[in-house]
Length: 356
Image 1 (cartoon, helix red, strand yellow):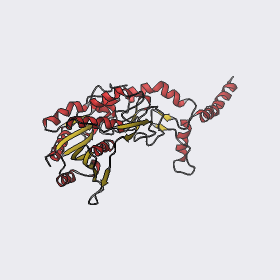
Image 2 (cartoon, rainbow, N blue to C red):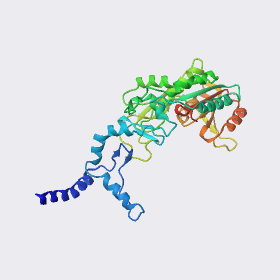
Image 3 (cartoon, rainbow, N blue to C red):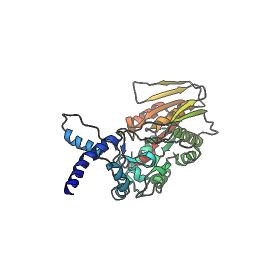
Image 4 (cartoon, one colour):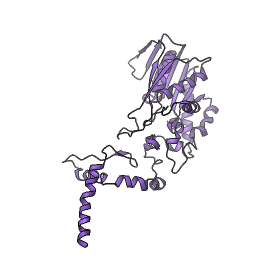
């Protein structure tokens, strides 16, 4: 009997790894660690043997399936990293990905009571008031809602309730009290989401940004607030699946089946001229001789402005585009005084409104 047990144990030492090697999908995503399986290391490298051990353990027969099936819930309750300041990407339900708290505590801004430092708020208010006071132009803070608030059903809910809190709602009154007019696109996007066809989305499932259709809904909402008798330009949209995004750069993105990538088709004849002056690569100007509105508009935008600005370029006679991540407040002031815009739109993703 002892001999039989020895044979069985020795056999298992070989059978379990071999079964793992034969049955493991090399593109499998380890959900608890947000990574693909380790690749076979290159011989001769400094970490060859430690990498070889990782490659081996990743492929032990049944190891990953068992750990994810029986311990995921336990791990999530007692060691959830979604709210760790070091966590950049969080895997949600149905293979949706979200920014974690490494990006301005964005996950916590939508899942638990979060106190924003008063110094952050005062700094942003001072900055916005200074920009506004550079000219007599209409000034609006345009808020691009975080994906977390528009699609909370895909957030994991082991500890905190998704969408129970929204930090911006708690502090937005301070903007009004300081004379900063803002346009929050949260409600209009939530309403538009309800009318979309199945699997069509306003945001990318594997990226932190809204797609071109989400930006279109927001643009129309903004224009309805600031343009009398606003008449939208006619567009059509083609939906498909986005293969990768800024939240899945280092892994093979899992299949999700959502139609989140959008191509915009302009149905009207519009002629746009783009030019850059004074060798300033950060400053882009656009002239539209077929515009519906003859005003000069300045758009100060973060990455959410990349999908938003093209609609303004189609609509207004003159558009000046300033990517905020590349220039500071002093240059903003200089450009405003030089260009004398009629309207200034400061496009800001929600998570950064009080954390810039």
